[in-house]
Each structure stands twice: as structure tokens, then as C-alpha cells.
Length: 223
Length: 274
Image (tube, rainbow over all chains, first blue to last red; front, side, top):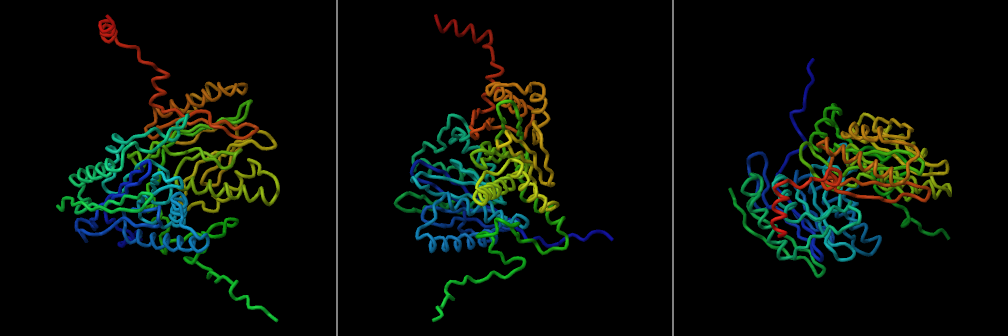
């Protein structure tokens, strides 16, 4: 008897792209707002960026139901942490928590491609990039999602900083100012929208600084 | 008078699949993972692996010599044909006197090495002495053996210095554990072995050994598309490990094979100098 294969997959890909750039005293996290399934658009107005803590913001593309479940787990763990330690989680701590949370579903993964952005304990911007099962790395900038292969080469060209593995060590923070970084993000999404069918509609940008979070919205092509 | 201690009781997690409180405890036993409810576990894992496409393609190497252990690795992570990162830390610092290398699934290696670091520390606290390299590698191998067949991808070397001197073990996701004094793991390992084996002598100085390690990684990155980035070299001695070098392999190429200026360029330089 031939093996029966499942006609139903627990996963779907809702598309979209997320980008984050770390600066000397700021962090820019951006994502488009299109949610798709197959060739259809489910909505043009879905936010993929979520604030987990004062200094840590998560942006995820992939299967949004898994992303929602992941955010719920992280929010509840953060609440417990606040009760136990009487303070908010720092961005590096949240980064490790996210890695462990993803790995605990190693054999039934969250289909979520995450970028975590925020400010570290010294107030410098930090960006952590993940794969679907939790391997993570602190970087100066990152793009994840359907448009990532279009965006990353351009960010490498503009922002490529010396590798943190080089000896003598060199800093991974981009020398751009905050308005320049926001402009770069807008440029990069406009280009990705031209060539990626799953990216478009609107661009939501969150800028994290020591004094608070600012949000900007920009229109992208809707076709 | 009996005091009311009900406030001290924590709610007991129900035992069974799916309900796990094991992010907060359970590091001393095998952590339990949610499993998909399917009859075809292997088929599901094959599809999940396709979806995850764990970062593979590496060159790592380690060898024992007179002055200790030399450990080196590249820093490229690839997902299929896409280079997802050129700056992955493939040499993991388990504790100040032990290193682990990463080859195979990045998340698997990162998680299990962190887990091993925790276990090593617990051993120190429980036994008032450092764990041996043999012991640490055995802990890891046993842990991986219990997940045999579930699709983990880990090819690691545990290198350290303990009471018996320098130690080097190779551990993989099948649960295999080999003691040896020369190993290379990853898609670039054949190239690295070629350079390493032909240049190896037990009586090398630290400088000679680190140069051999660096050259081996460089040659592997030159010929293997899945290896590249930065060649890192670490030395483990009686006082622990130190990072000796981290060089971009693109620049190393011109360091080993400098380009002599072409005749036309020389003429132009002379003309400009006049």
C-alpha cells in the first residue's frame, strides 16, 4: 500500500518583510503591512511589529498565527520577569529568551522569521536576527522575510561594518544618523516592493530611542 | 498553631505532552519538547527540515600539539544557496578553559552548547572541581544520543585543558564520541585536512600552530562555497583559552598570494611619479 501523505499542512506563509538597523543611540525597526496567502491579499493593514518591552521590539514575518502565539508566550514570560525582578527585561535578555522559546519548539517549529531590535544596557542600538528554530546573532542590521534576499545585499553595500569576529575587535554599529537610517529604510522598502509580490501596501517604521518610541507610516505600492 | 502555607505552594504542572514548565527548570534532566501529533513523524520532520533549512556548510578544525589545543573555524552560515550570515560565531566558549565548535544546524549547536555550559557549571558547584573534557564531551554525547533519529544536526568538537592535560573529542548528533588529536568537521573539512595533515608536527610552537590552523581554514574557504567569512583561531593552554586571530579570508588571500602590479600599472606609476 502506498504511503499516504498529509493533504493538510499546519503551516502557511503570510509573506512580508522586516528590517532593523542599529545606531549609536537609536534603533529603527520597520516592516510592511501586507498579509497574504498564496496569491491573495488577506489585508493591507496588518502590523508585524510588536513592542515586547520598553527597550525591545520584535518584528516577525512568516506564518502570522505562529507569530501571534510566539508573541503571547514572550509577553507572558516578560510579565512574570517583571513581577520577579521589579524591572523590564533588557534587549539582550529578551534576545536569549526568544532563542530559547524558539528552540523549545525544535521538533514542531514556529514558522516565524524574527528580527529583534532595541537598546542595550548602555543605550546603544542592537539588532538580533534569528532563524526559525532559534539560532541568533547580534548584528548591526538585518532583513528577514520574502524581500530579505533583495534588501540584504543593498544594506551590506551601504552599512557593511567590520565583522565582530575580527581581531582587533571593531564595533558593529552603523555610522548613520537616525534620519539617514529612516531614509535608507524607506528607500529599501520602496525597491523591495517593486520586485517582491508579497511586500507592499504600507510601511510601518518604529524608531526606538532612550526617551521613547516614535512611529512613522509611509505608503507603498498597492499592486 | 498551624500556619497557613498555601501561599507558598506553586501550582504543579500536569504531566504529559504539551504542558511543560521546563523553561524554568529541568536542566538536569532531558528537557521535554512539544511533539507534533502525527502518525508520520519522520515525514513531518523531513518537511520541517526543508522549511527550517538549518544553516550548514562549515569548516572547523582542532588539533592537539605540544603547547595545547589549537581550534579554528570559518564564519559563514548558508541556507540552501543563500548566505544568511558571514559573521557567525562557530567557536563557542563553554567556559574559560573549554571550547566547542559548531557544524551542522546553527540553532542545535548554539542551544546544546549553552546547555552543556550550564551542566558543566552545575558539575563544578556540585563537585567542587572543574569537569574534565572527557566528562563534558560525554554529557553532550549522551544528551544527543537520547535525541537520535529526531533530526538534530550537530557535528562538534570539544576542546579543553583539564588535569590530564589537553583534551579533544569529536561528538555528533548520532551520539558518536571519538577521542583524537586531529579533527576537521564540515563541508570544507577535506580541504582543511589536506593542508593540516601535511603541515602537522607535534613539536610546533604556538605561532607555527596558529599559522597552520589559519592557513587550513583559508584553503577550505577558498575551495568550498559553503565556507567563508572570517577565519578565527583560538588556543587552549593550561590557563584557559585565548583568541589568537580573526582575519577576513578575502584579505588573507592577498596576504598569501599578493598580486604583483601589472607592467602597465608600473609604467603609469612611474609616469605619475615624475
